[in-house]
Length: 436
Image 1 (cartoon, one colour):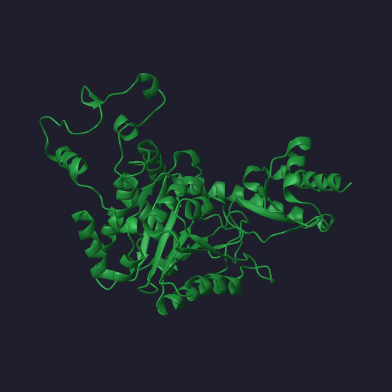
Image 2: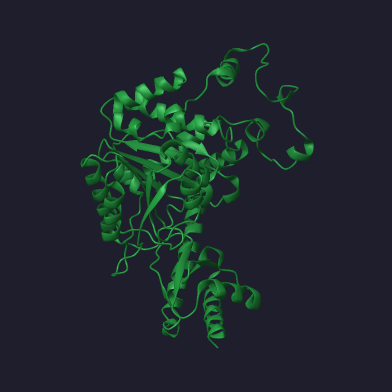
């Protein structure tokens, strides 16, 4: 093992040995290399005459560039647009995002968490998390209705086994009974489990209530207290898009972060959906844990392992994407503009609920509960989802996503409010076509 990795492991063990035990075999060996990166960083500070360390080209004291590229980058220094970013992400953005985490999650008050590490979108954050914490044969708890890429990342690439539970109970809310049973099954005879908590949920568009959130935290904390190492991964891709009063308005990460020494909370979030910048690919990984020693070196060790993983895969996320996100968040109009877009999204969700209340649809489908995010799903009663999807696409030019035998996903985020009624009427017509 590399001596740097061994030192990081010793730091983790001294502060919380259970978190060290949770690492995958790759995670144990990961480190952030000194070598060229460290020497380049030192030279950037000290080489006042000549710096011949960085793997970039310069010209007349600035970043070398093609004017056909620079012409499309306005109001931004070339060093913030075309240069490499650190594997950790640019520091001002990491600090600003952490500050906002405390503002957006009241339960974080008084708690210590890591400095977020920048990923190339949240999907890359999920993949990096799997690299760090999942070995072949490990068990991951996920709902039966889930984002399909979890299967590719955790099962196909890392050899994990899923334990699933129904997303919704008989009363229409989150299935706490099924969730608790799945956690029990996953933990039986095992020292470590991972649990994915995705709210707002993709594909259903459901977020838990405050009561449901407290119960999820209780279940996981009790399992940790029983001697099982629990990695709670909060996939908060659609964070903040909560449209109803009873919905929990913060990430479960905030409540999970200091519950028990055997419980590690991992927050995956980003500007992707929160700030409507999908193609900029700016996500974050943040850690929260209950610690018996000094927090700073512990979290620094996790950040270095995470950055080492990023260094060994994509090197770093886009500098220009990070710079744009940071400058936007520092703009005085940022919160005003974000609130305005939220109202548009909320109105679309409310319009969908109003249209679906029409009894003419009752024989055709049952909507799954939804109260947040981008999506809602229909459980079809009389036809299969995939033939209906294809029929709607080719006959009516309507694109939807089929999930399994009965479920159809509608991204109301893509709909203007005046399109909603027409869409669901067309879906109903498509069902009637297939029936006849």
